[in-house]
Length: 222
Length: 70
Image 1 (cartoon, one colour):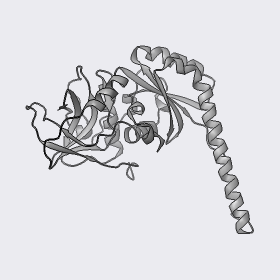
Image 2 (cartoon, chains in turn blue, orange):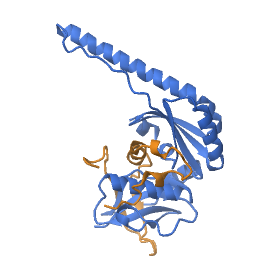
Image 3 (spheres, one colour):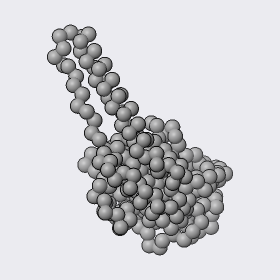
Image 4 (cartoon, chains in turn yellow, purple):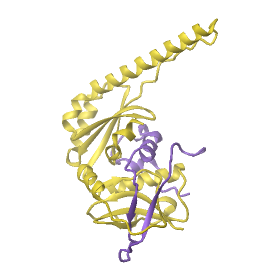
């Protein structure tokens, strides 16, 4: 069985030639209705290893600079299987392409380390232990609320420069993501560096392909 | 395993001075935690060949975390 590892759904435009992805496989353009899927062919589904994930990211990064691109999450594999001849439903992708095509994503991530939370394991009884656990949870919640408020307050001046924003709980901390027109890329970055100049606990990352803005809100919140 | 794209600097513009600060976790977070999820049945043609009406089923592989050692 041949597995096609999908990198992105593409709109119209010239794709860089000689693009290679996971395991140095040549990136093919597979028709999907009026659209195309950038994919590489493999004998089995690529494992989520560091090299594969970075290769996936590199392909998407090359593509989105040249052609309207909807990044596909790593792990979306297409295999030939049974089935009739289902219709092609590309409307969802076409809507996303209109929303993110020609746009880039920036993110501001809060990097402040969480406060140490003491849990009193030496508590004399169960009640005292549970109370210490409750207090620790209150501390963590207050910290998250404070960090989120700090992130929003510090980045509000950037909102007018963005087409859309999203708050995301990333693996490395809370982020506020900004979808920015490609033409405004430099303007946004300069303004962001100006705004965040003195904020040692906030890190600007990007430009990224618009991964965050093709993800449903419920998936982001998960 | 290919090393293609293994250099983080290839994922951000060359004129960025803070490439070192773009951590691996930012990349991984996007690659496996975000991006569109393809679901349902799609018709795909093989590149270079006329569209072949073959039912292709998309298999969604759940990827929560990188494998150990990755």
